Length: 368
Image 1 (cartoon, one colour):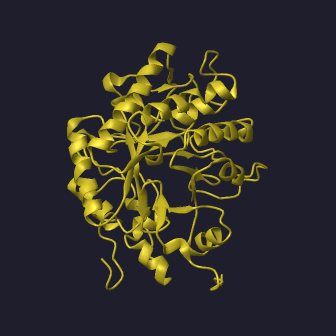
Image 2 (tube, rainbow, N blue to C red):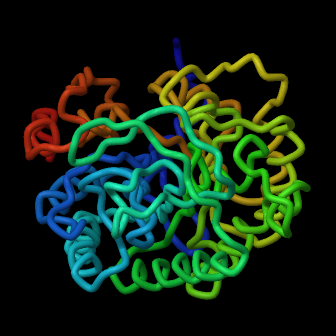
């Protein structure tokens, strides 16, 4: 695609996100890499990995469990222990030392887990006792998911409190803000969608009830952070982790309107199928959400340089998130700026392992 040179290429220019000035409009999307150490503590290798990618205007960390119950994969980091806070502090110091900005993505997987990953072999929890078809990554390899236990009404305040505590811990660890992971079929998404939420109490049934937990969690996090330092990630049309809704336009229009009223820093939307096609054939046009949200809109899913430039030219997103390209290209911003060749990611090293396929991808000559 030929870029219209009369239009400024503002993808590479600074952007004001609330009280933060980002170096450019390029976001490093959250990417699970399963490199955490014992006790799900971030390691010095993780600090190196994030620091290498600090030229992104904004880094959103890999999904980080808010509690032991929130864990769904081995070697994923947490933010619920003193040791984890200290490990993440090394990461934020490294990113800030390279001039970057970083938000933590707060995560509870809900039913996307297994008793092997839960304390005492307990069942994973969910909005309702509806089993997801699929597998999760445990110490025994990939295993089938089980039927979860529905959270009781009196347990839900504890979930909200876990998010608030995690937000406090993220602040202590030196993050610039937080993103609530309400996408990809995890706990908050499980409450939103009617395929997974069969409740008949105040958290089920109507759109307003199904959105209640996300909004309560958002308000709890806003007790800790200023609104412009909080974002929410949604995936309205993605069926990943066996999830869907009978009327996503009505549901997510309500959700985004409510989030906009809280003056959040950004809305981060997976456009299409997470890690898959952008077009789903569904009549719901996700640009509706951009129109409803009075704040920064981050577009995510399958972006390359041409699509990012075209999206900015059309003003269809404020910031553009890149995922897999950042895995293989620590200097992705500079490569995109120069329209330079890109390294190809080694998918065999995406999850688990050491520096191979993690911190050893080459930089452009003269870049660091």
